[in-house]
Length: 518
Image (cartoon, rainbow, N blue to C red; front, side):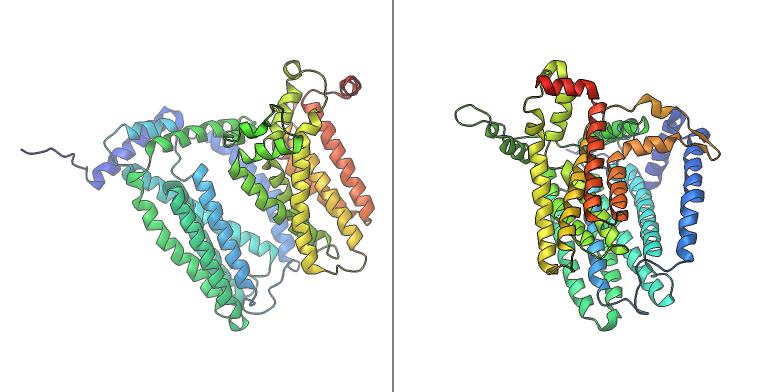
């Protein structure tokens, strides 16, 4: 008795069939039109002419903010390079779990899945092309950042090692992006641990090298070898990929893309929020009554453990960077530490729990939840305020412990500036979380000699929290007095709260009447 086994088509025939399917799909309207390409090209040209060219010109005619002191990499550069490589690799893995390189249009994926072709035939080409794009973009971004922030590429003695390091990091970022999507969670944890351990070893060896002469080559060689070790196993996993999960990821990505293009970016991000699970009975005491406001917030945070863990990392790190920046003498790199710490605290403040969303729902659905305020603000805001303040205080205390004693006269101003920054961040987070649909007036044209700049208003509305945080930090840094800077932060936070309430439909007059009734 003989059994019939399906015969795999030759590689050339499979390639031709995949090409035919893609051409058929493109004729359905999936191919970009000339008008569709013209508008992004117009935005890129505006960005290049009015932002990129002046910044590059200013950098080429002025000293770099951060200087590489010697003709070779300094001994302390190896740990920084290793830290950057670890952050890029872990970030690529995390992005791959949500939006990997194999995410394609749902209909095209459905057609290819309905054939007898192996997933390696129609996903391999897509993966190779997108990994090449991702590696190139990462390389250009790293080189641009290094050129604008340091004098790394000003001398041949540091330019060639710097290019080698950025190339190695770009290669491992692309490989980790694919690995994060096609491999299981256990494999991703193993890779993350291996990358962290390798970074510690390379940093220790590179830091002890004389004058850093060989540490930078080691820091460039290890990521390249890691990319070569990770890439082939990731491609070999393509035939056994879970196509059902890939179809769900593609459908979600398509919906998120539509939301982003139609102006509701926060709705696109909501598609990637983890669903709360577990600990439902922990919200209620044994006698049947609800737990306190702080306990309720903590339990709701534990119902999304991934977001809670990210907040537990970001808040102390952001608090440490924030404290390090405001404790300096002012100006120069200290402002960047201050701004980066504030952004980290802002991100962590949104991941401490789902109480922000509950507050928005109760404010926007007053006929359902009632008109009385009662304990609504306290019930919703006590946990974010306490968690953000505690996390920032923990990171700031560690920095103050290592830098103690602080410069003369900086202890009191440091406390005021950190407190003002936390208040500003909470106000910006409130403004962001009260966001609803895109206001129609933002779509009206703004005619200027440089063209229609209404798109800038839409971008500012999409990222209003970041705009408020960065603008507020810049204004606080410009105020010479710490007390004045803290007062300015409180005023900005109050303005954010007022704007957030207006977004939910709570006008000033109605707000006062509700407060009197509550």
